[in-house]
Image 1 (cartoon, rainbow, N blue to C red):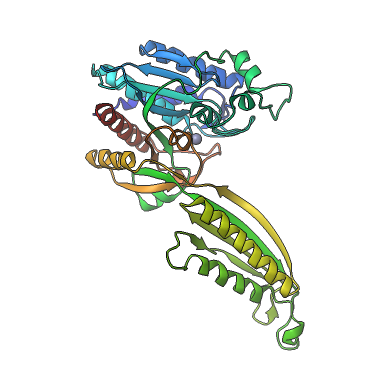
Image 2: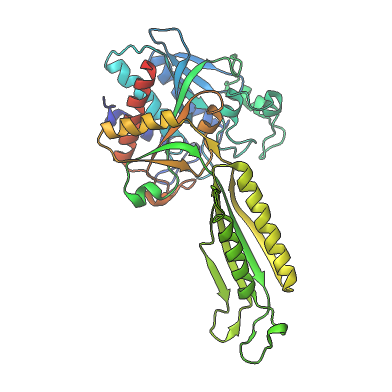
Length: 408
Ligand SMILES: [Zn+2]
């Protein structure tokens, strides 16, 4: 079965006008007037599609399309909020493709066995209120609800999540956790370069892999390669090489799932006959196991600090990226893979590098994600773009995977 591509693109275009920036960018900060406008539009479309609309205590919007059976719903969705100077696809794609799935089922007069629910989660981005993934966090009952509701605006500390939900009319009645979900699917742009580089249509996301990126800069002293005795050198290059070996060896231990990479290194002044003054290098470490990942970061830090001290050098350290791993449902990811193949699309199983509402939902029901390529891997940027055909492919996989889940 296929979605109505014209209707989906028109709808994406329509939402992109709410908080539009430049030609294709969008700025729709959670709980702002723009967020309210997008929510109002979604609510009217949900009602028009005959959905039963619920809003919960943190403002998550849930549109229920009843099935033949009165059982927990197959849930699909994402978020309508964006970062400052963001794009039109991050989040909105998952919500609007979800709406398109429901409208397609209506067009075909299909009554599913299990119900389907479309969810728009509150404040996924966490731009103006902490924590990020707020709505899904509360939906899965993972945090302290009062703490979440009293979270202060960074912009204006007289405002709280609760006060702003009331202001925009989305402080709902439904208790968080009261809505039963059978499973959850989130269609999202990849926000990375892998699918585009490998020319693959669909990512079947089975886990959110943990990752950290750290940059180290070791500083010594530049000096003459012929006249400076070894015991008087402050050689940043020699020290960096010890670090590179240590970091690489961590992932070469037998049985470890850790992956470590020193992918960049730069010496200054980088001349054949000068002892390096500085060596700057980056560490990319990834693992499916949060403990192993954390431990490796500590080991690397300790080793480099000791080693730099031993050589009488200076160290600067910058944490660039950090995400803990989350396992999604391998069976649901397998279903996504199968449905993509049925549609003659190329597909690969992959981890997500960024955090998503799906990782919160994974704690309460079988969950997986569908990724579509991001042009140049760019997101959280007004130049974020995903090609129309990729949008359509993702929505079609979402439709067929959701439909199969309603039968299971
Ligand atoms: Zn997102």
